[in-house]
Image (cartoon, rainbow, N blue to C red; front, top):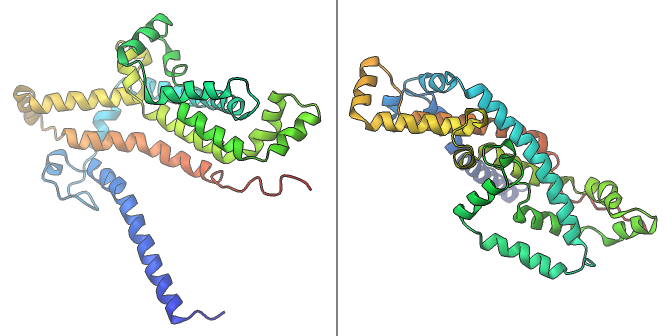
Length: 295
């Protein structure tokens, strides 16, 4: 079919608009990446947009020279893998139970869960709870408290409720238990929501640093990559505001500033997520249930 002039103009404007939106989405990340490779004192002048004005690897050198970085990376990878697996398992089981409309006290249980989304005990009760559960200075403090997120449970529950009820009913008629129905029928059809929740849990586990400071009392064996990066950033900020330290750095010829350290830490924590995303993207599709019900 021949494309008319009006349709050609529409496609041209549409493509230009999409390119503009794509540029707005990508440019902040590119700018952070560019500034992280720029000279620190030169970066304080600003006006760096698309390319480093004075190329330097000083920020990355300072970060990767940190002796505890490798062990902290190992802890971060471990907590991300274990936390994601346990979180996904707990979320799927709980969401499947709550999606069953025949569950006793279902409304009350849902109210209890949703209530915790809006109201929490606060930081001090959480700290006391962690300590009383003997999770303080324990690697499991990264895994167990974050195993269940009510928001993730609600998202997955809604997905399960949208699946054809006849699938689970057919499995029960054939004698399958609830666990077998979940494992063999529901989960294989739920790859989009499983991939989405896994990515959300993984990103949260990878980027969280506050629990390292709150629940490990500075133990180097439990330091995470993000905790080390935040510590380097705080030390750089203190040195830049202390006149004595600033003069000492000036004499040593150091060109580190909090600005480039901040951009380098953001780049280091973001790149692994960007590399993982393409492997999960193919699961972010809908309509997998079309044709699943016979007859």
